[in-house]
Length: 116
Length: 109
Image (tube, rainbow over all chains, first blue to last red; front, side, top):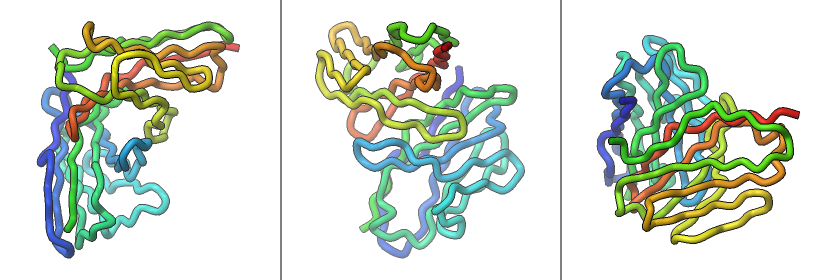
């Protein structure tokens, strides 16, 4: 149990376009989902926390108008990178936490975004 | 069977103890092995990054990888209360990462 999937696993897009990344909890209800960004061989940077049915809480320095997060259901959260630029190229990882859990997060496999 | 198995704990040890954290995996394609430390409400911090089998040491931390057994370990020597956190193992084959569920560690003064 506790499987989290992401789609797509890799995406290449042109500068100026928008890209949507999906994060799904496959066998549990995720009341909270987290979005991270990772550069090679570095720590995961928390971008935002979203609770189902409410607006996401963004970390300082993360542009909420550029990184749109929607957590419309208990099994799905989406991250949309709007007007992507080459500097947005990165590895994006989501994680999910079920109701009643305090510390445990289940991570997705990540999405590699390359903006040309 | 999950691709990565990690005992979620919780694990509680006295200050100064040696801590051993472990993960097993099933996918022999994994080439890169990581250990992260995560404090509450923070993103996972990369502690150790290894590529091959063997040991890698960094201060009080030693990462061990045994590809033949598909087993990785993180040892913490002289554990401190500040080491109290959740420790996540992770591994990847190119861009496909898999995380363990994390082990909650408490080091008591």
